[in-house]
Image (cartoon, rainbow, N blue to C red; front, top):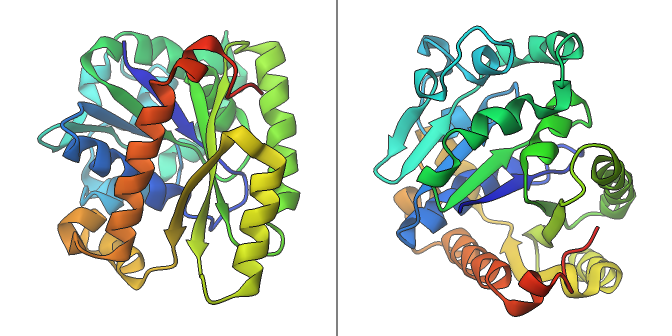
Length: 266
């Protein structure tokens, strides 16, 4: 059965969408069958894969609020082994419409269940907020992956997110696990980056991933071409970082410690 990973951090600008796009691309490079679910109304995971948000007949919004019933009506073939459930600005309205639905926090989970066995990994790009869209993503997920930008206020937002994860575990997804926490936009030349990395590592211990994603111009440029980092510059430091992240993540999720439940507890 596939592993469903929500990539979440309510703080914007931490490299969440960049991680989603390039993590699924790295997994595809490993010959995994992958689905990317864009749950962010900004739709940057959609446009970052070269899909025109304005011309889509249906999006994840239509699926969540019941305008379409079948996942296949929304599914887009983004790459040979990479499918996408796209999003655009219409998804903003889902926050209000989901309030009237029951069970409102399980709409995404119910839809994913119908296609889950087609994929090795399903990655969900969460919006930078802690509303119903994020709760739906966390309820649908087996585990949450948290990117943390190497900057001063990183830990402050992280504590809010961990509180939310605890509430989701109690209310709608008691089996939710922590896939890992890792550092993005790391600049080895600055003391601040090293300090943030050390503090996050100290706090999360066995749930801290050793891979760091460097601050890299090529990573910033790739989305404007609708390309993953592997298509845009496969020899860049950014590409190397996401290859390592995908390898470390898959190894962790296949480890005996993960299966035993000794790591990844929330």
